Length: 281
Image (cartoon, one colour):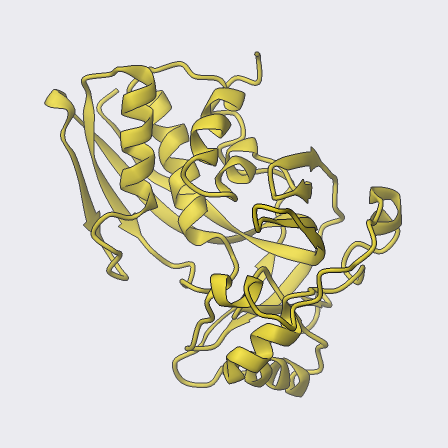
């Protein structure tokens, strides 16, 4: 095998996000539910001998040393392989959206290169490598919608009913670090349980980051107003600035404002690459 083409990297939405407290080291204790949606980046991998790594941006330009290259180097270091790769990326998931695009690209890179290089790591081993790259990478490696706890490292697979969502990303983004460091961030949400969430998963809880994000980024409020004009009550995903709302099967979105990234998405039962790594310990 010399290449892998049209390899998907799906986005995620946080169905809710509660901040339960903060540890002495400054890390926040969270609860959330991560849901995969069919808004995807597409990656292409070409095997290279000699260990060299290169990246080609086919759409939106990325930083020179992004999470994809960091993931490739991490797998090289963990496996000791002398192989390399040329990686091309068709970037469609917007940046600074709270949709995990960069982490998903990194997870797809680990799964694809594990296959291309025949390094034969199982899913748990790839997730451990991914955790050092980004907090959300293990979720995408895991391959299933998940109940998330701790600082994001505790993942419990969950099942969700099929549904469609309106997702709107305005032009401006918001700093995750600025939100978590803000003195007005609510950090006292009570712990929830999966059974309570499962009773009404698409309307459960709230996003505790949302009020601070709206204060720091007026575009978040504009996104809620636009979804409201379409007849939807939105919620922010992650640290924003993308917002989303469930959609009835017969509804469609009007033309979005110029410069916005807007899509009608469906949720996914599992990651498209869920079978690309063994679950054996």
